[in-house]
Image 1 (cartoon, rainbow, N blue to C red):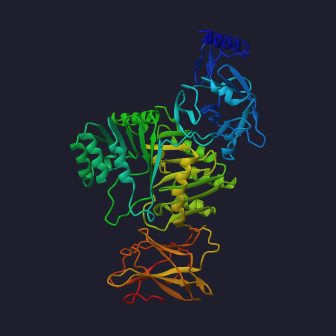
Image 2: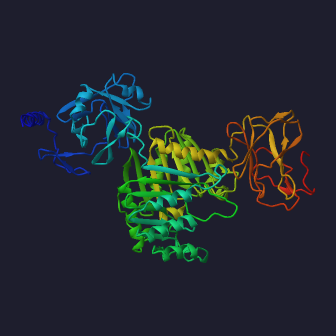
Image 3: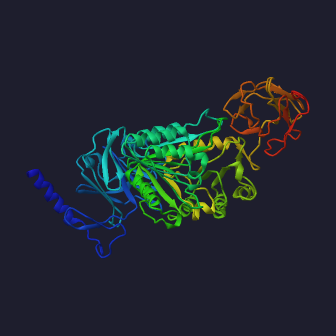
Length: 632
């Protein structure tokens, strides 16, 4: 009791000494007032928020749109107010979306911090302040409240208290890591990628089916089209075991006889299925599970053809009740008959998951295109994109403007829209390195990775193609994730496609002067690939790899004599169909390619007289010689 009285006395004294803020209660702030313990109200409208509290550090994040200098900010630890000070040699300005750490000068935290994470110190020893702190209040230099954090209990060594929602805290597992996301990767954000030519099979159907199988109460799905047997079976099984399952889809496919089996299976199992009943597309590709998890991305769960082709696609699972509610509300609207412009903006667009800021916008009512443009305009280092369809002239112009201000802009566009009539033509014409894949698999991604490798790294994904219909009439979803770890995953997948693509502005400096000049795909004989030397001297092949559509590879060796040709036995490659072969060097660059869907007929090969390196459009013709002419 005496201890409580002493604390109350200290608290009252501290409150009495706190400076008054002129006009503090005259105008209600945008975020509303927050009541303190003594009944007064404080504004919490500042950009700096507390996201993690360890036993020897506090992690802050800048949620504003401008950089913030933390020096002279105040932090109240329960009833002690301290001033933040610079660490010698450390940055103390936090970029938008960036993290910063409050730690003592001698703390091991600083040694563990990545060099790019800003850090500041307190005017009093931090560990003692944290030991008994139940509440933290962050104030700006002019003493306005920026954020308040109420911990459920003091953090013990090795355990941090991390923010899940704006006003809720919970203890994380051991292994808190200051300045890197939040404490630990708890698996609340997961990513999957389909990589044709890299993976032997598409991992997305099995991943989605397993994700669906975990449902206990409800599944809400907005899917453009669906007929993959594994995914259809998972949804039907969920309905049969008592899960409430709803599917909204595009009427074009709901009314298509070739999809009748899939939709019939769902309805027979008790799944509620509705179509949009209009000409514009219900183009979403998301699911909500048990009011907590969201599956989203570019993937349409479609049956794959007999040749085993898979599309370049991506998917993401997010554990967030807030985002689940936002997506479920979208399904509610569509089940009530509201599609396209007739929907309303329901809000709830931003949530934080494991320290990652995630924004979700639905077209057309939320205008996701505007947010994509804002993200591109904010790029400082790089923009890497992978797009199925790219017609939006304003987005193309913003990419050119970014390149003009020094941003590294590169991209890959699906072969079907990589032509002069689209923004591919405009960007290539302006000198940008924008490519189209050699392989004929569909490049179905709608991905932009911004400022990869920086604290503000951002990923944009979802169902939204860069077209007018996506922006104005279709039902679409866009997810913007500001997180370095997620950006690393998406950059790695983007790089796979980029390295298997080429365009008019691709850097060919130092490429080996060899070209695929003939491919034997006939039946009954050993297949071969002929390589021609385009140089005046012998060309060694060591370090080059011949890659097939199915992911098979042949490491090349030996040399091609000056002006000559050699034949490489291609038994290890899938040449049943003459679709795509590439030779890559040790840096992953395309040296030469073969891409032609025409089957030449039994005993014939495809050959090319013009073997320029590399050339996507040089014509191939069937050889007039039975069995081809390897090495000639």
